[in-house]
Length: 65
Image (cartoon, rainbow, N blue to C red):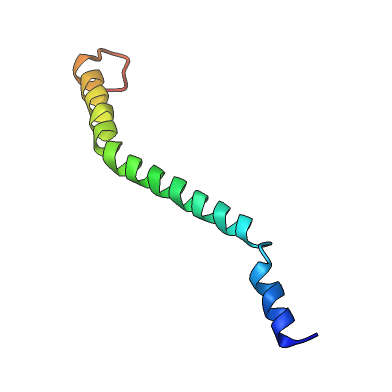
């Protein structure tokens, strides 16, 4: 076998292509989750703080005070 034969076979080999595509897909999904978490993170924190403040203001015994 010649070097040209090996190079031709190497150029036609696509066995790793699916793994690379899945890796890119996973990275894109992870990036989307991170962006969403940073985008709505402050709103979620504010909602929890509102609930905590409301409970603290309106709670009567036996709420732990």
